[in-house]
Image (tube, rainbow over the protein chains, first blue to last red):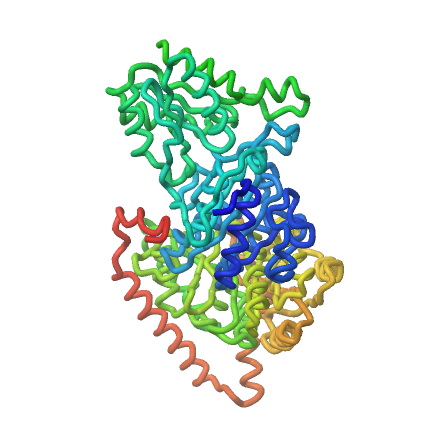
Length: 327
Length: 305
């Protein structure tokens, strides 16, 4: 049970799956000799060679599209998009092609690819190195969207994603890469795609989050605990398919629900969680469903004051928790 | 060639006869020569084809049956391409190694590069042919796919079927400039008369040799004529125009060649036409009787089940 940070857990999962199955390969900008801009593929080039750790041209539509073609001819590609902000040129390949191939061929073809993309802010990345993109893709049937928040989950979920017969978008929060260290189970320990996990049990309200926001919610819940308010924190981990049962079960116990994300508010994935809660747990609610999210501005500014203004943080989340608990 | 033409014509008649049915039409007339030449130089079931929406003759020659394509064109439940989900024009088959394709023009070119990359990585002696209409060469994915294939010297052939001389909405494509782009990518490129089966075979078989010997991808630009009797606005074409178009009919050119070589006479030609029409007629009758998909089956095959 080695201790790892999330970046090392991602690297270990890829390496183990490449050892286990020679059909698995990695492709993306600078994933080979350089080992990835965050080091997620560091050492794989030396270990597996350039054909399986492939430096691609700087063309995101081709990175995903070539991965799709390689998958249709028997490989299991892991395509890395260097920053989630640059995934948009591949939107068509992901949405119209990868997510639709099984459906449009009535099951004759399938696309077992993983698209890994570092996302999220709080690292002074500015408008084009900070975005949260999950809402665009969680909307798309045929595509799974996974967002781990811990090293062990990143390891177990990524291995599940690589073994999944359908396309998976795997979003890794870049600020979480080196945020926490924990024991990661060895070898074939998989974490199932789908189920959410209760990170902190509580009684007064349920707080739903993913990625970095899970950690911020846990910090806020810790603070609220000192004030005598017990908050449950649920890490959704997978946005598509979404674990509705765990969400509803939690809200039915606490009677109050809030969702936290660093994507901007309107049309964010929090709206879907809120809709599910109001549609299916209305009778159990003892307050409004609250969303804590970034303001509706185009993206996260580079300068510190405005970056802080944009991002939810433990203080902002704790304030929202206090208000909702007192409702 | 003759079977594909028969499918196109029969569906055109059907469309006029039953205007209330879902519109089912396909356009291939004029492009059959280069399409069947491509199939002739490839190994059906072993090499890969990534078609575009006018490749009926190519798909038939690579192993799709007349029943397969008529089921697809009529959106029937047993349509092997998509179970009646895709609009008419797409034909795919895993068995025949004809890739499933969308209606997004250009997207298939990067897939083809990926298929070819996988063949290389797996050590398989496979060639991939991707085709596209001339305006598809405007797209970003066309560029990204060819660039990727050229960088990695992949066993890929990109066939551009260019009918802009007869139907180009924004005028004819400058073929020399298109072929010159191949040199820019660092790959071979050549233009050919796509209505001339033998010329197309010669160019495409050199491209296959290049792919198999590790010399990388080839861009093949094929000039074809869209054979039709009306203008886009619906008026009938003048007699002289029709006669000019007929000189670019690949089936007519093949018939003349076979007659000159003493391999075909009028009687045998008629028999071929009759046989092909008969096969298509039987397939269409069967497809028309085949059931439409159940509404609730629309939920199937979103993910592995």
